[in-house]
Length: 376
Image (cartoon, rainbow, N blue to C red; front, side, top):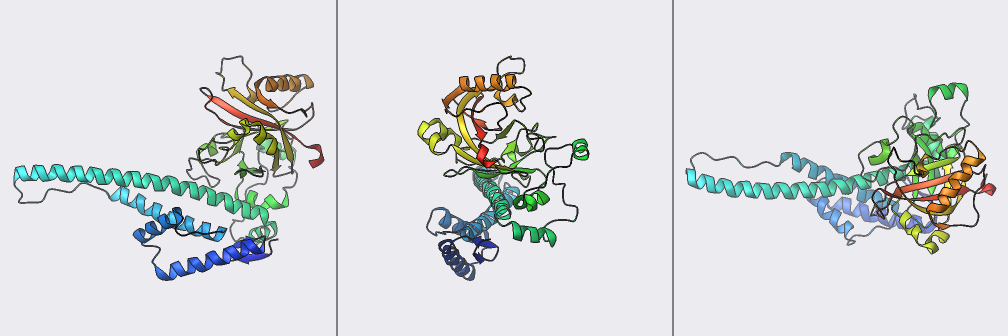
């Protein structure tokens, strides 16, 4: 449990708490000075924060910035729907009318184009922040399981018909084999998001995200945030063939290679051997068990056509035999840019992180890690 709290925000250290208090005072002063619901004011404030002229140093300030971005994005979307060309006024001479109309139409086109570009920029920016905000909320639930449990018990956020806590199982499997208990820190998240399947963190990177699983619609989160809202960043998601109860040999997690570094945008840094060795450890929990993994291979591959007989790393989910496992490992070594010395053996549990890479058409960059036995 965090030692310091400001409203709904919790802080682990006195230093973070002090920054939060400073941001709260700054926000209060702004709110007492201007009308934040006025679009032009919100826009000016947005740019002052965006360009660093007004600075915040805590999650309190970050939430305030997201709220301002919300106002700006909604205003831009409204302007787009209202933009229209001016109508002809009665009594004007035909030639003059035509000339004026041309100028007005040209002006209207320019204004509309500017509004569309403006609106698209802010909508894109807004959806990025909205997805980030949704992830931060889930992180709060994960890091404060006691408070999150109270939310569920008191029905503050969730209905009585909370989704089943078994991700990755069809109805027949649920009836035949009850799932193990969900880890306490994930109970509140699963109660709100039935697709939630785990959490992945790599220290020293931006990767600290929830991971989803949709067995009946594998690409659902490709361009959606955790709340199912449109988001070009998407959300990290598991291969739909993954079984979390009878744990699959290899759990594959997919994510976009974002230029911003979000999602799996930082995986390309693993093509630097020093970076790989410094960030080889991955913490990945399913909703049922904790895990620490060590990256043993950094690989490049290409998506194969359906009729191709070439090896597909993304089709290895379950090792039915030692021979199948060893065959897979041989192919991984062939595709690897870097390979560690501590290779997995049959019976080890694997984790694969996969993203796009432009080294070739339909290229893929993927990391393969094995679960550390001391973490079991």
